[in-house]
Image 1 (cartoon, rainbow, N blue to C red):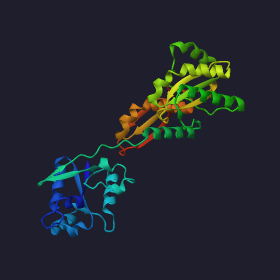
Image 2 (cartoon, helix red, strand yellow):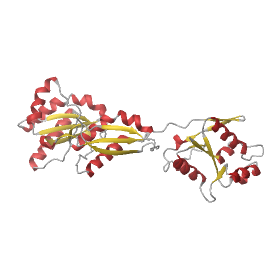
Image 3 (cartoon, rainbow, N blue to C red):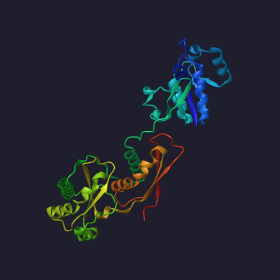
Image 4 (cartoon, helix red, strand yellow):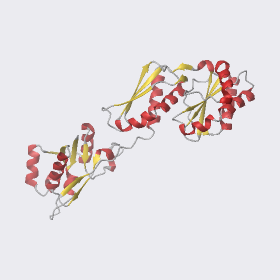
Length: 341
């Protein structure tokens, strides 16, 4: 691993009696990094050669190419950050580079702090990379866009009403009444996962699976799933009796990554609109930082996608790390023809 030494920062961190930045600081930092198995790359801003305590020796290091200087008129901090990004290198510096945090979002995990204890430099550890906010939602959104490009519509409503059994039943009744009154075909929308079958509800579900006109998918935050499953039987009966349907609807509760905790969405489909299985499986290539988190949530991703495109079975979701993706938040989505078995 290459480590760029922010030479000006290191030299100024411990000044001599003459209050000048010390060349010795830079040399000690390079020596210690080599001991730790790193390859130091020393980058100085253009002004350091005029300020350093040993100008002649510093100049010789520049001439031999052992030190490199930022081009005159170039912002040294930006130059170092950009070079580190391009070279996939760390940076030895106590500068937090806060003014560049919007452009370079992985500074904290790339920067290595240090301190001097008497004449010895102590090299610290970079911060662990922070997980990118809402990365699961971003991945799901990209997957849905890819399905749309292949001609599959998907459910896009994300308003999220306050969660309760009564609210779910009322929303389902209102939506079905609207469809029946206006004669509108609902957009393709749905989900999967194991069907929430209950002992008392088994016969109703089996009948609805064969003859029900509507399927009601209740989309909830994964943390609300167990609670909402308890409502499913009552919701089906309430909708069936209130609308005087010929057959009871099937109610399936699905985890959906877009839904906030304590909220829900209801997707209503005609039974014959539901695809038996997802037409494509999903490959997610992800950076090492986010791999474990995304892998752990792969089933929730599958559930969300199946719900939105109207597939009965989950697509197969595979998550693989890639050395080519170093930044937190980096990922790539590839759809593969197939469908789960």
